[in-house]
Image 1 (spheres, protein in one colour):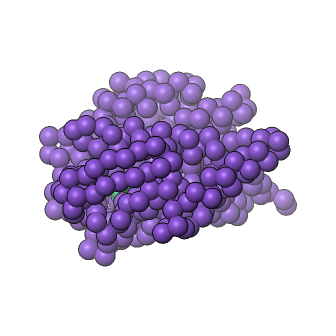
Image 2 (cartoon, protein in one colour):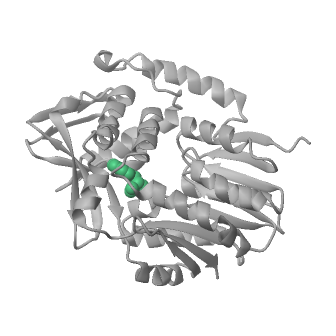
Length: 361
Ligand code: TRP
């Protein structure tokens, strides 16, 4: 029986004319790459994407008193591969806890929802953990799976792997979370319920207020009866948390530093990576890990394609990411504040991490 479908929806892909002019502009950009770091971007970047990247880099690197870089740019092809490596680090128990809970409770999770259910995943990565949910659903119905992912390489891996599951059809969206979710919501059949997966504690990468705002936006795309499965990493002792974000092998440091390398590759920047060190700090008041790239010496940074020139003092840092940690008792409130009801919660016994099932009110 032919039961597998895999297709991908990418921005602008149905417009051949747009595609041709995009690649012409791309090659013009390529000729001004920094020769010292002459690596082609893994996937051709449309000019509109580069303009946005440049604007984001410019706005965040000039922030005062604390310079920043937007964490979504950590995930180019190399960054996504390094993140996959982070997920198997002995010190980073989060992904294994997430996967254990999904494996153990996939049946409970899907049994809480009325058929038929379609599944959308925000930031699917390779989608490995999602297999349990899809297999549990496919046992009772043909299942549509919509991974939403900004990294083309991660999305391709996800489509390939999940497309092999019997009775699962995969339609990938190379888009940001909300753009992707809106696209999925408009194409789903009216009688189908949607289960949105937001796993691995990606919610923790938003500041708390922005996280609420994001969940409210997710809720707006949903209907009564739809659900959100939300992963949240829980507060644990500071030493364990720091090690999870600054491992002795240096994989996390490489993942973080790759953001500077990416700016060199794609925007012609002159960051010297050896002059920066990765640092993870626990902020107790905000209950979050903060990731910084700290200048080891005075740095004159030039990023021609972002029209930017800045000086970094020795010891000055660029803040690249936050990872907020939660206590189980705050999750109910978070659901209520954002238009959901938390109907179930599962906590891993080995690594404090919770899987929370929210129903759209
Ligand atoms: N969502 C992941 C987390 O908060 C992302 C992540 C893991 C990360 N390790 C990192 C981001 C190191 C930046 C640096 O756990």
